[in-house]
Amino acid sequence: MPRLPATATVAVVLLLSCDSGRSPAEPSDDLRAIKYQPASAARPNPSFLPFAFSVDNCVETVDVAGTFHPVTQLIVGPGGKEHVKFHINAKGTGVGRTSGARYQWNDRLFDISNQVPGGSLTFTLNDHTRLIGQGSAVNTRVATQIKVTINGQGVVKVDRFRARAICS
Image 1 (tube, rainbow, N blue to C red):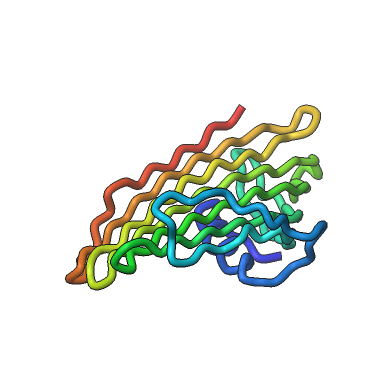
Image 2 (image 1 turned 120 degrees about the vertical axis):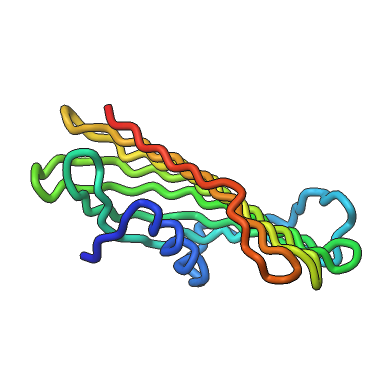
């Protein structure tokens, strides 16, 4: 099984979310009212998609697998300004390679992008991951915050990059 650092998980999940997956139920026709009356909006994607990768916690490498549920919303506002919201809930289980300990994987990812045509692009990511050890196995929590702005001339500015891991 390939081994990925915790921050690379975000990229893998984003790529996997493009698959069609399977729907546990038909989508609702009830769309929430969207401020500014967008030119277009996407319905939530009710599919559950599989994931599998390896992640290091404070003690060992853990092979995790499960499913995640992506929801994407696109709002095109006045002047073509695009506002994209992307959210993932992921749940799975894992097994420690060294100890054989069992783990529960829970991940919440929130991504917001704003783009002005011919202007700037802002990308904000907040990811909160928990790898919960069963029995005496260690618990690991990882929080990542990233905010990047690309101005109209293509200059990239990292406004925020915070990553924190807590083991208990």
